[in-house]
Length: 332
Picture 1 (cartoon, rainbow, N blue to C red):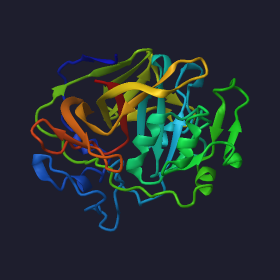
Picture 2: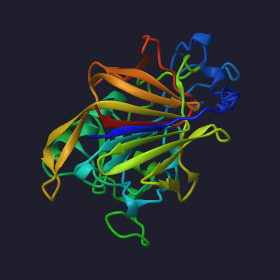
Picture 3: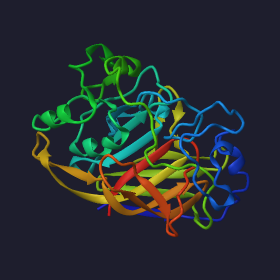
Picture 4: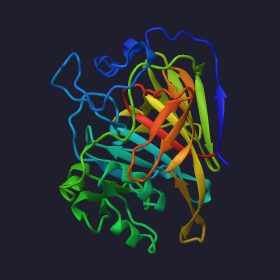
């Protein structure tokens, strides 16, 4: 079972609010000092005509949602283009490993990858985005019909061949990359970004000062180290900093450790290992990292078509810091 290990120490966090990406925080703190939520999206006070992304709380116009399954085992690293993702979901797969589901809308990198296969859990998780595009390398044969019937635009290589290519310096299956703009060309009616329950604004009171947090899956671990200089959480996996070939170190403004039920699914990989299913409809607890602090929270999602809301223990909205959000789906 996944577990969380925290290492905390006292250090100054003054100036965090001022560094949360100029304009983003000012546009998202309509709730005032009580940490109330900002309607999403909302015009920026500094730029009245500018809308904010419901995924990051930063200035962005509504745009089609592209989701991509990303490989993250050793041979697949470093990634390309992952720093452009608005949201990064980390979910458990076979043999205790993990895999990434990247959500992009605000911006698209020229290239993204390596791209890997989809899982049953993705179908439930993606319902809250409407009808997004889903890029993936393939799927278990019995799962493919369910993907094709799901409310999304499935984009494996055989449906969008011009969007994919193999990178010659890496070995298969860790060398499949995609061109996001061409993926969306193959899904011209993909849903645009909309409210999925995230709220951005001032941090709630309390919280525990944290320098580093490690989240463990059975056969993988992620570490998030607070950088007071960058005002971001720097991401490492299995003891090695996660970087990209096109953008340097991967970072997050907010990290959510969402504790969910992880059970066996009806599908297995080619070796016979069962594919875990992470249930993202329901309710449970979470830990939210922002601004060098950790906050205990609760999450709720009533149906697959609903977004996921996060609240403090007192029932107030758990505001995220404007910027990229990482959500790790760990076992309760």
